[in-house]
Image 1 (tube, one colour):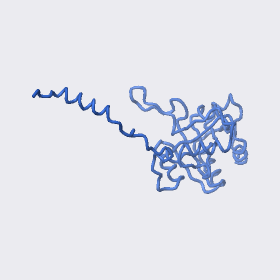
Image 2 (cartoon, helix red, strand yellow; image 1 turned 90 degrees about the horizontal axis):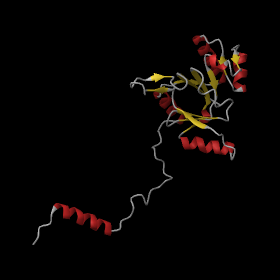
Image 3 (cartoon, rainbow, N blue to C red; image 1 turned 120 degrees about the horizontal axis):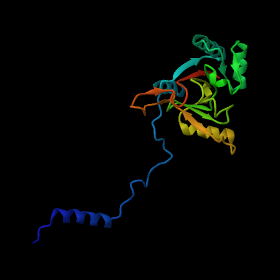
Image 4 (tube, rainbow, N blue to C red; image 1 turned 90 degrees about the vertical axis):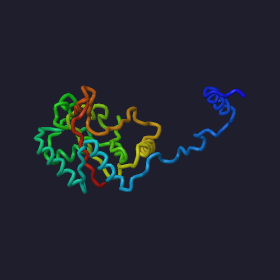
Length: 212
């Protein structure tokens, strides 16, 4: 009897496998099941932890009075002569505190910092969800050396899909033309594998999170 070679054994196995129909491994996948395990911490604590891991600077405020005091203290500490703030509601606070708000787009590039709101804060990734629907939403997120984001507890969501779902509820068929995620200060390590901060945007990123 002729001995079967190793090559023939492999070919026989391939031939038998091709003749046997089996259930595809992806047939029973539950696409609605979450990919990631939810954190045991609350969403705001998870956001603070993840955001800090990305070299962001997180400040919690119990109310808007404390928020105003903390922002004023930061501006005084950094000796910023003026800040840029496209949001009209925030401008009222800062002007009441005697903080100079620069509204001219040409001069806003020279301000110490820009203060903006956000759409949502994503807990799992520590990211900030922004859009072009915000005041000057395409310009102010990339021009300053320091970007300060003011957010509220109600804007913290668990995952990206939750933030996008809420945006769809809010805007309906008139969704913003630009939706983006900011995950920590701008940085790159493309040049000789050396980490460079502020390569394509702000060197510093603050989030002041307050109760509604």
